[in-house]
Length: 186
Length: 186
Image (cartoon, helix red, strand yellow):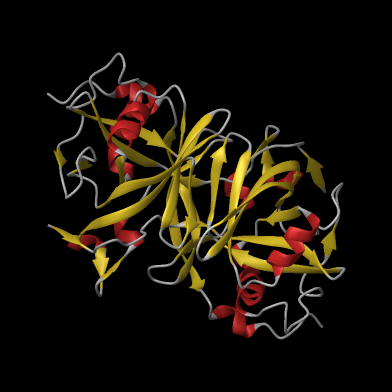
């Protein structure tokens, strides 16, 4: 029996990533789960308008996307709980830089992307940054046969309903493959 | 040691949902993983321009979002492998309707949303539908204390790198809570 919960956004779990930017010359990180894939190589990063990070992103037109692991959950949650306006978050993580200015990445994450902002959409609650990855860095230990292996990346997922971080579970089946077993409904 | 993979979109895994629409008066479903949260109650559903479903969505200005379970993976993958232009997918799932026309939902999924299209963004490869959920239907058996419990919803996640569907894993920690254990880096 289905219950109607009204106009509830139930599109969870979502990846919980750490967005890196530079504000006033200092690295700053925020935990963001309102993300998406807009086009094959264009991503959306939606951030509440009050976030301190947003001014850095708007000034630099760059940001980084970092994938924390469950082992990093205390730090990952911490940078989502305090604002860069009042707390200096530049020392929470060791960082490295790539080609882009203003997009510091986190050394300890297995996977990070440095991205250029290609558009900004002004929504009622969020600034929505459409970004294109320019370079994607993956630990070789998190790859299998030259491809990113998300079992080894071990990303955090975010569930707003029970307010929990979750792990990624095991593989179920191969995409664009298992469906060929479908023989009709009768 | 991190390897630079170039401008690769690595924002995975993403939810693998089934988008329901009505084309020429018949229910049609497609498997979509290019989704996102744009604003608190605005979602993005990005669909390759060639998809048959897109014409139904544009005509009706509605769609449904359905959460298949791992047990439904054969059907879920099947509707992503064949086009409604050549195959009638209206009998793959038993459907139900809510308030909106043109947004059939799947009886067997634990969680479904009927949505109105509020904007369409024309990207090079994808039509991007910005939608607002109008009603969200959840099986009572997939809820805990009146809230959606994603352990019970048991969603499918999509990994494009190894071309696999994945399960959701276990809880790691509470959001906006575990971060208070952070005591600084030294």
